[in-house]
Image 1 (cartoon, rainbow, N blue to C red):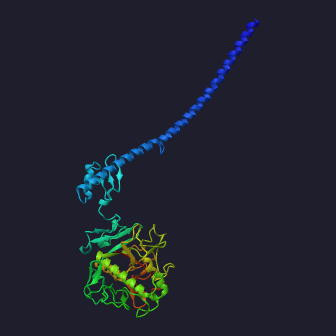
Image 2 (image 1 turned 60 degrees about the vertical axis):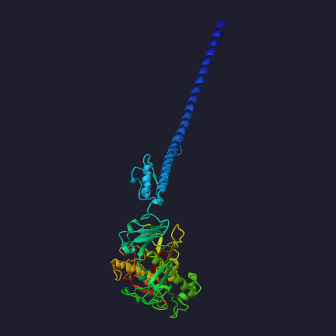
Image 3 (image 1 turned 60 degrees about the horizontal axis):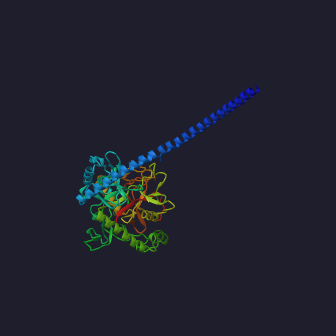
Length: 480
């Protein structure tokens, strides 16, 4: 019995141990299973992320597919251009389009827009830049060199305009008769002033009314007097409103209305005030008035030569503005510009007077180009007259004041009615200093100013050292 009992006890203990072992083994397996599931979920998340994230395998595969398709279309476009150039000495855009159809890149010419952007057949991509060399220059396209543009709707005498490198013609202002506007990449705008005959604007220094200027090569000369010294032909014999229209065919270097000229407060032209004062001269980089006079004569002849060659010049659409220290021609009243563009005036601490305005006008630079093809300047009196004559020929009233039109502020562009042929602020805003001289101590200012109603053609005058806050100026550009 004892033996049996001991056997049973021993067996029972073994079974209990086995049961306990089995229970303990089941617990470990459950934990391992949970851990395994968690690990698998983490690995699944990582795998899904690797597949579907922005840089995931699926997106990378999709991007690679797109890149391959895009490169394939680019190759076909390049081949189409090569084929067109092999068939035509100077292929047109239509020649290129025809080859694009032959290569299956497009089915219809409309798949190439006016800017040369190609919308391909399936798979569809928009590819730009390939046809830039074949897009005819026109409104909306920046010139990568001096480009000619013809406005077929304009007067036959001046239907072609040269647009300088770095500018585009505004699509909404592309009519020469209405005032064709160009804009640089920084937003400065200029209006083309046609001059069909340089003899309507300039003469030789002998003057007298019988001058006949002619461009011989790059030399502008008077064939009547065999002279190469070119001066302005002005359309007034005295200052004041309603004095515009009488052609001044005389030229006296030291008196009356004239340009180019210095004012030194001496009837002989040899005084030591104004253009003869060392402080004023040093501001411009000259040591004496004779050096300044020589420079003015050279500048005037270069401008007149350009006008004779290109049949016109550009003026700032707006009065001279400053963006920081940079001269611009922008509407200073727009939401975009009102906090960063100020209208320059002779009362500002940085400009001080006529000399500061003159210097600032020469500092305008065309953005993103080498500036070897265009020159900026303060507007000349004869340029202002040429602008007035052109506007008057287009039946615009420029000899009478009009209080309903004048810009009654000192912010250029703010007077939306003060505009003639797309040129703003000729009735008012500021009077505009020019390079024209008067008597032996004054420079000429044009138009009216805020609070004073004068005609756009009105000639005022003042000492160039005065810091008039009601006086600004206007940029002008001519092509070299």
